[in-house]
Image (tube, rainbow, N blue to C red; front, side, top):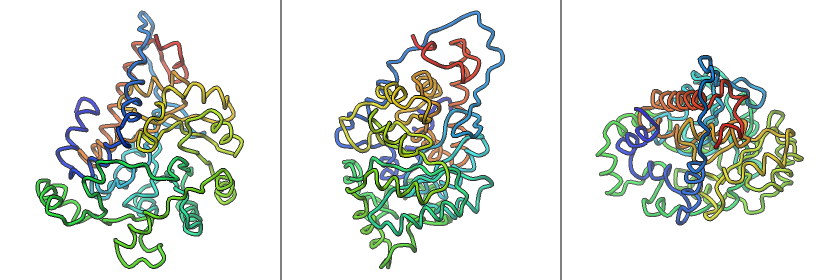
Length: 374
């Protein structure tokens, strides 16, 4: 596996189509999904020579914690459908590599499943749903699991439509339609591993939904829980019940960034949900400098959207981010090879970042700024 694209191709072969497409898809015509990648690739590097770069350091700090790389694994829904117990395996790989891992609300393994299986705290991503009592219980469970940060996602108050998910009839667990059965049968390795998985449904929700009698009731409940009334008062409420570091994810506007900073965010994530929500929104890299300027040094700024290489990580750092959330890049590794695949993805990003630092004359993450861009 020489690059993230190699992992992507392996994952395509090994993961059932509905779940691979779920990771791949963007909203509507996928204009924003494409823009995230295209605008990153337009940033070219300034090649420097005859600089002693024999000693290079990719380590940094994010939210005051040391990280071996300026990346964190982003929250990804249905990780456990890419590979059995996928969230546990991804968290283990991240912790071994010395980078943060973020467990999503819509994960297959629950907060407790992951906490019991790993040695260190991880971050937890929260959706604010209509059932505020349930939201409070999620926060309390994250506190009990000693999660190091709460990542509050604020750009999904209404669910953006991904056409491919509708065409595939995406369901968790997989619906037993003929084409789905044939698709899973064509991937016996995946099917065999899933037989021993801890869960086949949303672990954080199972057993906690009033009136739940089975998977269908759980799915129906979820589909009606995204809350169009979500506003800054809800952020204040979350801040009042969460005692730790708060990261607000889904910021794409400088004014919103300033408001998030005033609301007590330890960090914000410049994100358009990987092009999965508002299609036609600008790319995240195009908005990053203005948002960094808006919050100054008051709030840490992380970057999300389109990262597929260590060079993309460097581009985001050069434009002012203190670190990147990596989503699809590592989930391809998970689908390709479980824990080892995630470890491979992280190592690919590390090597690409280190080599790019050398060829631009940067010896540490602190030296990466606009001067490394042409």
